[in-house]
Length: 188
Image (cartoon, rainbow, N blue to C red; front, side, top):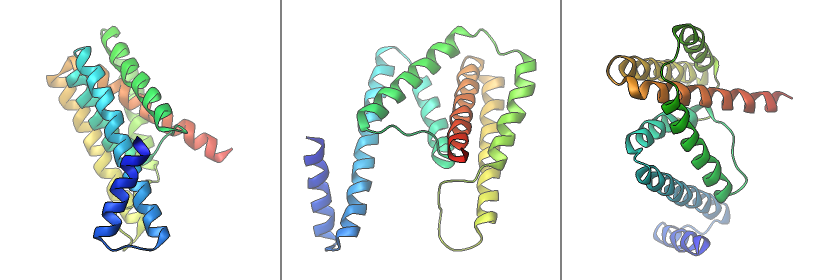
């Protein structure tokens, strides 16, 4: 059923744009599969979050993942269902762990937050904004924006939404650990 939906969308797009080159059609197919897969995955995770009354937490984790993980990369599953299962387990684990921790000790914050900022400041971004200009300058701008967003999210949640602070903190740590694990595998 999923492949039929993908095929229908690819045929529609390629016919409307009058694309006949097989390589271009494959690029469109990959894009359509990715978009439909992500919509399906996020819908399932949102419905589960809704069922367990974690809608706000879903939005927070989704925003962190969409801003940080898509920029720096991370692990990937071999199939859509594998990705769904991994993502669902990760979201549920983050919700559960954040609820069970009464507060994060100041010493851990003092050690971990600078570590997160350091990793974000040294990362080579996977996202390509455009092909013109110096990649190093673009990378530096992306790093500064991402660090700024991260620090603001931590500060605002620490001051106004202490109940979400643990979730944001734990989510950031999980993203960084995943990134470092993937980088270690790439280097070995």
